[in-house]
Image 1 (cartoon, helix red, strand yellow):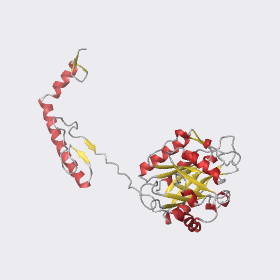
Image 2 (image 1 turned 90 degrees about the vertical axis):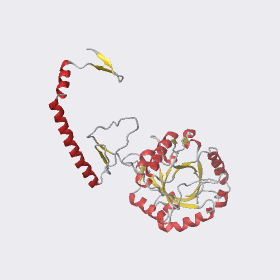
Image 3 (image 1 turned 30 degrees about the vertical axis):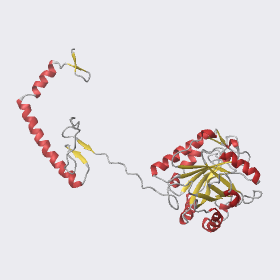
Image 4 (image 1 turned 120 degrees about the horizontal axis):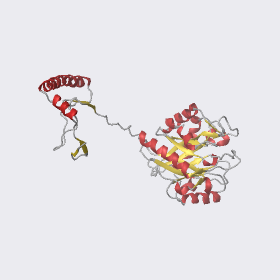
Length: 358
């Protein structure tokens, strides 16, 4: 069969049956029928336009918007919208309103310093946060935070609440960790919110998975006054048990959490979100050089572990050698020998952006 080039590729010549069909469509009777159908379509189109205007819709009908304004065509180009086509205008997605940090602003550092009490609800041996109910403990936190308050870096008080707690028993999922109740999280959030503070949800995953545990807390992490902490000391391998071995995590696991959290911040138009990673041994985060910084996250490596000032100073400076991230420092009320005072910590170089008390 013969073909001819029409500039847009090859098109075959019409067969004799197609030619007869074309002649039939171009007959006078068929032309009259087409004119009648076009007239009816124009009447229907006018009715549709009127109905669209009355309904307040935003649809293009017969090339005319609901405000009866003709659509503009690009000069020199024919419109590619055929008559009688009904094409809805896709509405532009509206971004969520921008939310601020507790106390105002969109960023945490370097214009704020977080001072936090750490622990598990109702378990005093895991930290001071478990020694009293959240509202009763707040005045003590305010008093502890006061010496850190400076004109250039005002204090943001916080509770770091262990949301996944490691257990001696494996549990039904054999993770050796359990999640606290929604009501408990809400109680602590209500307290910090009443005082314009920050709630930090801490993950001790046991044999579980950091990312899965974090995602289960999405409801709270979508709030502007809730941060996140990862506790690799309690990330166990399949042959490890809580309190028997020191756990660890990988850069890939941290990056997976960071990626998900940064996407949450962007999608909800949240202010900068705290992501704190506890560390006190070199191998607690393996391949740490591969840990990535993400927009929308204030990433902090927190000098955990207890001991004498001299020992903790060495560990802190080891963390400071990686200057890509902010630093935190945990003080143990009972286990530390000669605990650091607020003046001692503020004199460190660099001074910690987060100070925690356990």
